[in-house]
Structure formats: structure tokens, C-alpha cells
Length: 254
Image (cartoon, rainbow, N blue to C red):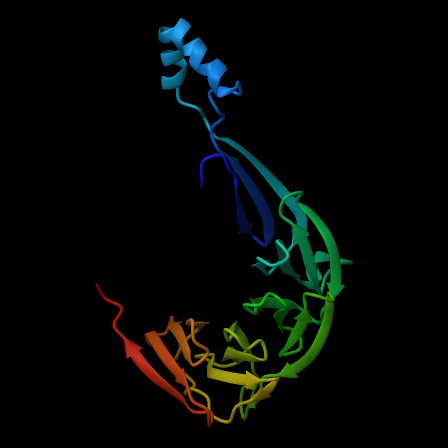
């Protein structure tokens, strides 16, 4: 936190959003510099005592009256976007736009059945939303505040349709996303990492069973990093033009 500024911390506890505002220590004096210097010369002991006294930070916590599954921050608009599930009631199955300064939910837009994971493009214009009730992913246009195209993630022979474990948008290409997929009926549930270009799946995915549950792109759209809970550890995945995904295991120990 920089001197003279305040910071904002967002926390999600049991699906509820809390905004914590942390203000910096208050200034010793609001008087002009020349006046303050003159006072220090007239009463040096009193001024030194005031200067040595610790100045406490001030905190304020606001609870937002919505239930959410995931939240992202858009640096372009300066707003939070949250996925709101059906259990939130009348405003469920939507994307909520939140003003972090006022703590006000500025609007809700219907997005589809049981929105969950969110991923935002680096240009701040496109938001991808997993729809856990439809086994699909849907685009959301930040500029127009409208829901866009929706696409499914494929399905297995025995375990049914695939759902989102995690997703990430390629830097510099808002049409390209990677999805870590899962099934809801088998164990283990991992169904490989797949790449979708304009909603169309590239032909090759990583192997199912064990792999990266959590994924994110590097600064390059051709390199993806992932981590798996099932023993696969940290992985680097290289995306090739013809659809292949080359996987390299990385050392995770100290």
C-alpha cells in the first residue's frame, strides 16, 4: 500500500463477498508546511512527541448482499464481476457488476444455468463463464454488458458430458481459451485440458485421468502452466498450431 493511498481487499467467505477498505495512517498535520515548521520551532518537545506517536490504520468492512461462486476484477472498467448461482434467488444465474468504491451492485445480467468459474481476457472486453448446469461455457461482453455465444465441452463414452474445473483466456487472443475438464460421475474426474478457438475444440487434448486441475497462461498464448492435485505436480504445456499440446513436467521441490 502506497503512502497517502488506501487499498481494497476482496474476500469470499462461504460464497459471500466482503470488501475491506484499509486507509493509511493519518497525516500528522494538515497545516501548510511553513506553518508546521514554525510550530515545530516554537514547541519542539511537543512536536517531537506527536511525531513519535504511532498513527493507526483505519479499517472498514462491507458485506455485499449477494451470493457468488467466483469473482474477477476488470482493470479497464474498475469493476468486479461475480457469477451468481441460482440459490441466490431472483437475481441468480447471472453476472453481477460491482462497484468496489461504493460497494453497490450496479446490475445483473442473466447468463445461464449455474454460472461458476470466470476468466477475463487481457483486453478487459470478454469474460468467459462456466455454466455448471449446462456443461458449457458462455462468453460475456463487458463493453455491451450482454451474454454471447455458448458452447459445450464434449463428453465421454461412460461418464457423460464434461464440465469446467478451471479455464484461462490466452493473452492477446480473446477468442482462444484453455479448459481443464472434469466429469461428474467417475473417479478420478479429470478429463484432460482442451483448447477452444472461437468455441471450437482443437483436435488434441492432454491425457485424461491425471493432469492439471488448475491452469493459467504465461505471457505467451503458446505456453500454458498447470498444477494437478492428483500427483501430476506442476506442468508446462506448449500449444502448437496444428492442435498438439506438448506437456513438460516441472520440478516443484525446493
